[in-house]
Amino acid sequence: MGVGALAALFADLVPEGAGLLAAFAGVALAMVGGVVRLMARNADARAYLDAPIRAEWEARPAPGRRRAYYAASGALTLALAAGIVAWRAPVLVGTLGATVSLAAQGSNRRECHLTDEALVYGNVQSLTVLDRDDVRGVTLADGALRIERAGWKPAMAFDAGDIEDPEAVVAAFRR
Image (cartoon, rainbow, N blue to C red; front, side):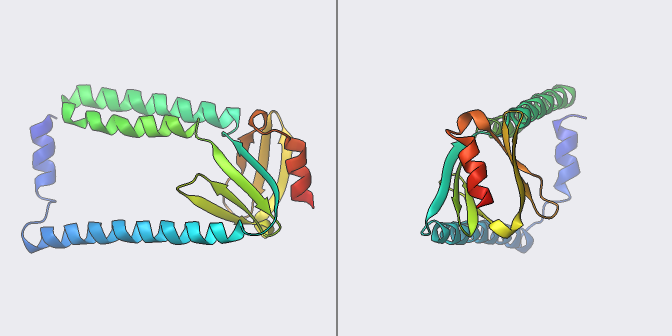
């Protein structure tokens, strides 16, 4: 299947006239809504940072998670490259940017601030709040600080080697 066949396949899915205008307006509105949501979430998180901070640290994901990010990025790169060659579609080279983004998650550091009410974590552009009531446990093992969360959310795992005093962080959670 070449590029022409892919174009023909998607040609029937693209709206025309007023439908195209409505589609663009919907995408623009969704983008504005996403930015407003991000700004509101950051404002909420910054409000928590006005309280006294019990512990602060900045760390990368745990070593096992970093390896998983890098392995997933490598596998996705190979799959996309095989698809580009098989379909003879060099226009799809831009999709390889997703693999770079996935690999970057492995080295992305998160700033963490623990207060009496919540753990505020993320980077400068996007902060997230985890209420202290939603923390189910904190452990320090195998070179990783793991924070178990309530519900279906996976545990957060940080590289303990990046944290100046990981035992003090665990003790701050237990207060």
